[in-house]
Length: 151
Ligand SMILES: CC(C)(COP(=O)(O)OP(=O)(O)OC[C@H]1O[C@@H](n2cnc3c(N)ncnc32)[C@H](O)[C@@H]1OP(=O)(O)O)[C@@H](O)C(=O)NCCC(=O)NCCS
Image 1: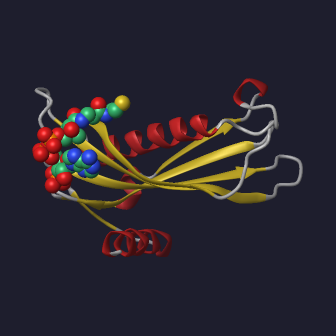
Image 2 (image 1 turned 90 degrees about the horizontal axis):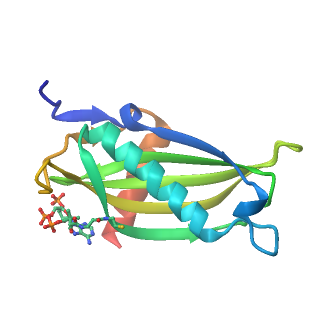
């Protein structure tokens, strides 16, 4: 099956949900930062695989900003979008929010940019479709990525 030359951001938008259990937390009852990083890496990889229809590897974690902590018993929502593409690389924007199931309060806890590279069966980098936004949220993400790379 031939691959498209371009795909909508919505095609690969990825959402994962996790419940924070006692074993995920430190002595302050807040989640280990490493768990959030693992969630980010997995969501970014799934998003990049959906976009490229290829196997992908993490080339770099370009930025991670922890804005707020996450408590035991809270719900973590991890969302990933392809923000831009190169020949074989995909810049993935990951937004992590936390939801208190009792109060329904939702807040942003972490934001991250990750570069994923599509590879073929021999482990060499392989081309990916370009990406285009369709919604205002997606256009904002593209702009965020452009601002970041022009810094
Ligand atoms: C990522 C990897 C495939 C790149 O290999 P390479 O020989 O540099 O490949 P290429 O020169 O063809 O570059 C491929 C793309 O990767 C990008 N790239 C390479 N290293 C990068 C880095 N450190 N950060 C961001 N992008 C990178 C290049 O810019 C290029 O992008 P483009 O095709 O969109 O222009 C290779 O370094 C690798 O396999 N790394 C290990 C990945 C891994 O195991 N990750 C899990 C870590 S636990």
